Amino acid sequence: MKKLFFLMFSSVLLLGVMGCSSNDEEESTPPANEEPAVETEDSTDESASDDSSTNEESTDDEATDESAADSFNFTDFELEVEYADHQEYEAEYEKENGNVEAEIEDEINDIKIKDDKAFEKLEPMLKDLNINQETPKEDAIKETLNIFDLPDDYTKFKLEITFDDNTEIEFEDEK
Image (tube, rainbow, N blue to C red):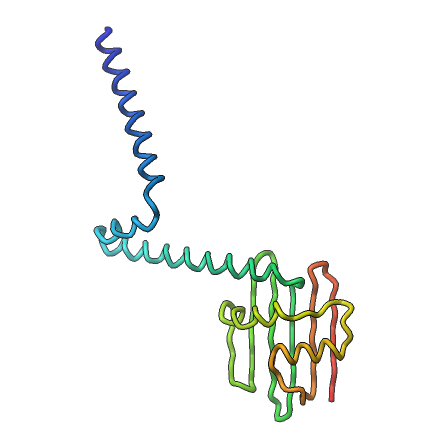
């Protein structure tokens, strides 16, 4: 009976030690070392691993986008500037429930981009934009045209901003 008890106790102790040591190895192994293991697996698992790393990168990009978007004092930005010959510049940014949407339609330079690419282009301009509820219309128009590097010979200008506190401002002008 003592031998059976000793054998069971030793087995449990051995399993416990092995379990603890395998956890330590997993924690001390950096994630970068996981890649060589993928190379030894079959191609189906390898493609799945590649997809997961791609997803991790896009998640990091989204986190970056969200943190950048958090630096703005507004949740919605819409700019429409019309020029002669029916050329238009439109830029839109919206942050809702942690999701960021952006779009640029620039008929002047024949550019039409959405989502991450649009946000990358809009982010530095929106960061520099210093318009609030107290900004006079003329100053808001001048600053917006300057930051977006747009000519001031527009025929119609419209800017709508919704701030974090849900107040909205709108600036419109026609020439």
